[in-house]
Image (cartoon, rainbow, N blue to C red; front, side, top):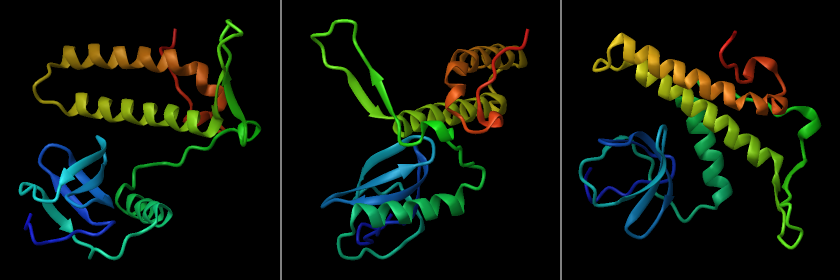
Length: 177
């Protein structure tokens, strides 16, 4: 990457360790980049090993809302396999409350949409892990099967959260007996 090139929000890059990513925030000496697999990482503007896939000129500072809209547009364009997963109607606008047994401690409360998003991200990352295992040429077939069975058991542990999904086809399924 040329050190004189200033990337704007929405620029697409390929990092040698983190893979494909999109610039989501500019700092004085670094970029915040959202990588497909590894999430948001900060990368120095002078990092030379990163390839620019599509440069978008840097503009005046952008609001978080504008950056978020740009990122959503880019991700939808370039990550066709991603599906939208809907929260069940009865949970929309609700809160998750974790109440400690000790009444002197404060409960933890968060929007159920935030919690649901974390569950969906866990599911999506498990799917990516499955794909990586199945495409790995260094693992034997027996090792792949053993790892796949372990992931299936993890899915089974997560079936408790199926009540949150609007559509049954999005929910977790574990081992069938």
